[in-house]
Length: 265
Length: 204
Image 1 (spheres, chains in turn blue, orange):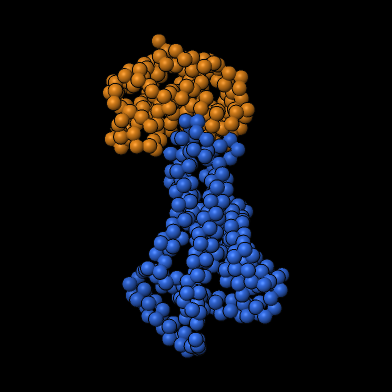
Image 2: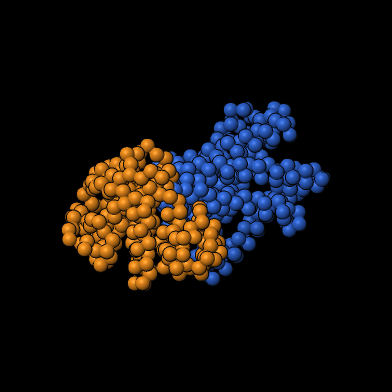
């Protein structure tokens, strides 16, 4: 199957749609017109840049560069998790909890998939490693950011309830158990919904991309299933870890609720 | 349940000067003062809900020697606004409290009542019953009758005093009403500025 080349002027035609939308957004005074345009510009710029980086990376294929790329992606994802929370933990914790959770879940799941399931040679082959890691980080990031935001919002809103339970002699774990479960659930919901709707309501983006670029649908489907499962595992374990650590950090050694450890961003 | 004195040693809470007091088993120490003067914060420090300076001990056991939840189960604070998280009253009670509920004028089926239909006064009295069901060794009461009408106030007061004497619980009781303080207090401390001043001659 041949791939139809896309040229820049064809992309520019797609961009006029976004401009038209931005016009409507301004007209309706939704107040997100600027954000929409900036986001669209960032998409174009960031993806173009990453295209160059990937081309260079594929050409070199050295493990050190692959690792550096992975690390760079992780740091950006960590910053994003932090920025998406209305209230986050003060100091290094705000950045570290999200980032370390993503490192533990997304990286280990990616490496496991590469070595045990897909098995490219070498296993760190950037053509497989980088897109897989990117998909995982992107989704894990969303899950962790949602879960942490839900957790910190929850304890701020339910402060009286949590402290009321502490006063009755409950442990910190009992006092915030419902909030923890709630936060973990909200981190898991996007991937559960995506898996439930996959193929019925929407064709997942990666699969669509593969089919458009000439892969046989049966193979694209297998890759998509693999990716979905991997994302579910990565997001789930990352969310568990992030919520566990963050909720512990909201209480101190004497099991006191410490909302002063949160700062609004 | 072994009870003993509640000892506050240079507790620093809010803007108050450090507080040192010894509350004997079964003694009710009333605390009054303008709003915002630090009464609740003092209670919170004694319950170890906020970081604070100074130390507290119950029957010789120090706050630092117990895990947070064990301390708070022993030295139990009952806030003015109580927290409820299950559907019904009964699910919140660690032990059946038939006698206490009867004394406070509740029906036998109160444990099946839904939390949503409770009035603020009912919540407040049930919160006191719940706290005592945990068998605490000392009580910290933050305006325990604030939401009650005069009759219910008297009834709740009498019941509380009786339980406190029976179980020999050292009690720190925040109150506004001078008449109530006269009725229940063994000693009365009033906050003036940033210090606690002993008021005498309250008790008849």
